[in-house]
Length: 184
Image (cartoon, rainbow, N blue to C red; front, side, top):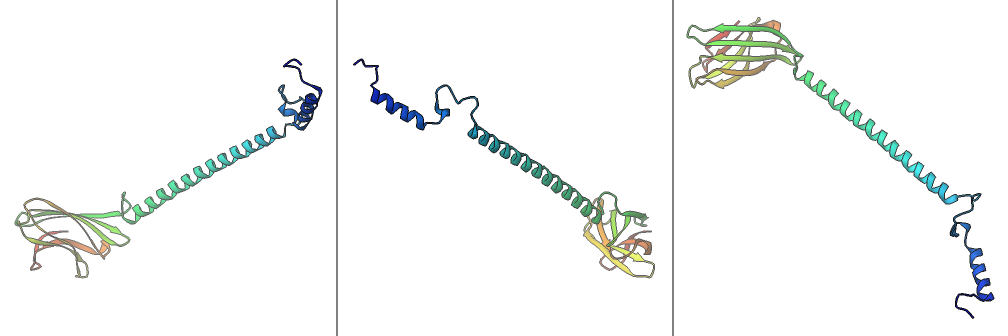
């Protein structure tokens, strides 16, 4: 028998094997009228995966937007509470000069928590212990800050639990409570 010729028994075995294989396994490809279950299943899986990715992208974008909005709102809220950005009302700019040449200017701002002061003082004697004192209409005094003077100008921020309309003046006093300079 020739080497490339198959016997009848061998051909029958090949036919039986071919019957067990689906048409998709044929070398020419599946028949054109065949239902492509695997291709439809893979297409469905791909479509569902793409939808899930788009859904996650939208959720991530929405979450990021909400976080940014929350941070901005919190910053505005905190900024208003601290008087940042001009939210307080500047009620007065008090100025004064002493006979010894000391000068002081004080910006008085009324806030929800009381009075905010920013005082610029110049001309104090080096090493002098100084207190910034707020005077009210009814004679009370509130210490708003303290420092030790040096040769230059000092800018000091302070606060007092009093309303701005009750303030009659602001003084710098020494350790004996004597006024060194008063702004009114």
